[in-house]
Image (cartoon, rainbow over all chains, first blue to last red):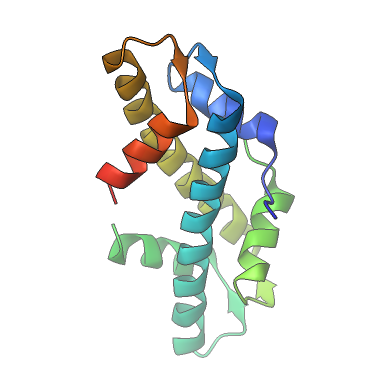
Length: 69
Length: 69
């Protein structure tokens, strides 16, 4: 089950320059964006655990993105 | 300006295993996910242009993700 709204993902595709998009385009991009977000979140969780914190911070997410870019 | 809802991105972080998250974590992950989505959409737009189509399809997004993974 996906968490992001189809409308938001459609706006991202349109802002990137596509005028017409098929119905499956937003669904597929949603899946891919969520996979990426889940991957970064899991890595960020490891960072916050490693730092001995119970709260995952924005800096944990940034560090995960730095490492895996 | 971001397009995704903060609530949806927070759910993604929590599903990845984080129990507590700071307020900036969802904001930063939203930015990163949107950057990724925008990048894939622009590449997918090139694919659909190259194929001589006016409509961007899910298969264009998949091909973009295949190439840049």
